[in-house]
Structure formats: structure tokens, C-alpha cells
Image (cartoon, rainbow, N blue to C red; front, side, top):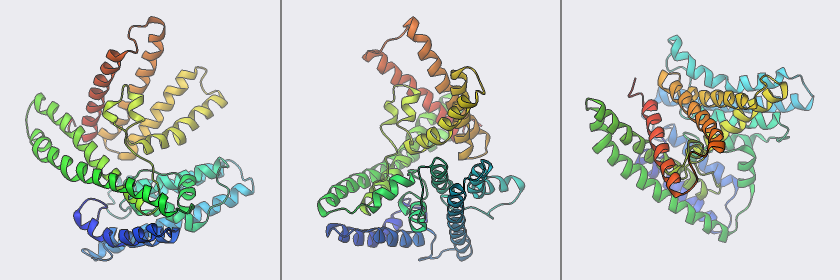
Length: 389
């Protein structure tokens, strides 16, 4: 059962949510409550309570457990290796081994092997695992308790589709006891986000899909494609932002303040501003763990003399990998490279404009920037949708 996708899921969530609410209002919301709720809701997610397909359920569930054990053992082994000052190849091996399950899930279908490996949320869980590996590599994480790691990895509100939390923030957050007054503030935030989720995902996304996007998809000609582009962009936002609102709201309910994932992205003034507002946890993950690592390494080792060339190559790599992460299909790869070129082009034009001052910073230019950004972003979503291909 996909989290937050049906009303039935919220029916199963009601009991654990009431239990967490009762403990929170009494000032007794502990990590054990979050752990217990996570176990129950993972059982719901994999249909272990109401089993509709026993063979699929068993395989998915055991794959999840195997994955969690694999990543936990890898983290522990890597901590030991770092404590003994092992050579650099160990760092690269740890990253590769952490990526191995996701690579198998993505590549095996192209070899004609379908449905053997993979489960709902494996991509997002891989990001969490890699965050811990990178933290150990950077010396920011010196110790990891397996209970902490597994709860962080499998935390049910954000396991399937994010937001992508960070290990150090997560552990510090859920280990901090909350008094009743503070939990009431979290409860207020939870209710607002959950109500927004219902509005976005079950009302607005539904209306856009049924009455605009699907009719536009069935149309012919460039006007139909243009209509589909705007409809799909709105649908994608309301559907995904609605899910994220549910995930963050339910996280607050059980004592974890998961990071926000959207901040009025269609009001972005430029493409960089857009990526600070859209799928924020994913874009910052790629910025910190891919782009910045590449730029620092390339600068230190003097791979290129021009700092801008290094930065632009970093954008191509990070956004290209983001596209590949969505899938190996052509439209995902083109989508990632398209946004890399947009960011590179914007940076180049901004530097070029400093001396020529063709455009300014007043309200008119800001509004024009919002309109232009909206259209290039919507065209990117059209690429992402696969409708052009």
C-alpha cells in the first residue's frame, strides 16, 4: 500500500497516530513510540496486515529487511575502517557498496531481469544510507547505533518519497524530549500540513488530472501539447507537494520535524531560485554530496584551470545524476541535462550582465524573471513527463 495515496492508508494510520498523540499530550513522546509506529506502518505499507498478494508482499518485505541489514553492516564496517586509517580506496568502495542495491534495481531490467530486486522507496533509502557514509568519510559522524540508523533509514512518513532527511539532524531531533507545550506547537504544524496535503493531493491534483491533464494528453497538435505542459506541471506540483505535506505533518505528529520540501516554487525569480524551492531536500543533497565534493576535489587537484569551468562541469554531473536517479529512460537524462544547461546559462548571463547592465533588479525585472522561469521550468516538466518522446 503506497503511503498517503489512498484513504484506506489513513484509516490504518489513525490508530498509531492517536497513540502518538496521547503520549505527546502527556509529555511522554519518546523514541520508542516513533519506533513502534514505524514498525506498524511499514507492516501496512507492505500489506502484512491486510495481505492482498502474499508472494509479492513476502518478497518486498524481505528485500527491505535484507537491504536494511546490508546497509547497517556496511556502516558499522566503514566506521571500523575509518578508525584504522585505511587507504582511500576504502572510501570509494563503501560508496559503491551502498549504491549496489539501487544499481541492481535500475540496471537489471535492461538485462531482461524484471521484478527480482527492488521495493517501494529504495531510491530515497539509498540517499539516507549515502548521507551516513559521506558523514563518516568527512569525519562528522564518529559513532552510529544500529537502532538510530535503522529508524532513520526506515522512518515511515518519508521512506517512500522523501523528504530526504540528514542523519545528524534526524537523530538530534528525535532524541530530544518534548514537553507538552512544545508538542502542542508541533501538533498545530502537523494539522496544518495534513490539511494542506488533503487539499493538494486529493482535491486540486485530482481536478487538474481529470479535467485538464488527461483531456490535453488525448489531444492532437502543438496547442494540446502546450496545454498538457501546463496541466502536468500543476498536477506534478499538487500531487508531490501534497504527499510531502502529509509526510512532514505526520512526522511532526510522532516527534520528528522532517525538513520542508517545497517553498512556492512557481514564484522563483530564476532557475537557481527554483531549485532552492522545488524538492528542496533532494536538490540540497545533490548540492552538498555531489556538486560541492566534485568542485572541491577538482579545485584541489587542479583538473581544470578555470574555476567557472569546474563549476559548470559540476552542474552537469550533479544534475545529470539527478536525471539518472529518476530513471535510465531518455527523457529523464535529457531532463537532468536540460536543467544543468539552464543553471550554467543563467550563471554566465548574470556575470555578463554585471558589466553591461542590460537588465536591472527592480519589480518589473523580478516579475519578468518569475514569468520566464515559470515557462522554462514547465517545459522541463514536459520533458520529464515523457510526453515529448
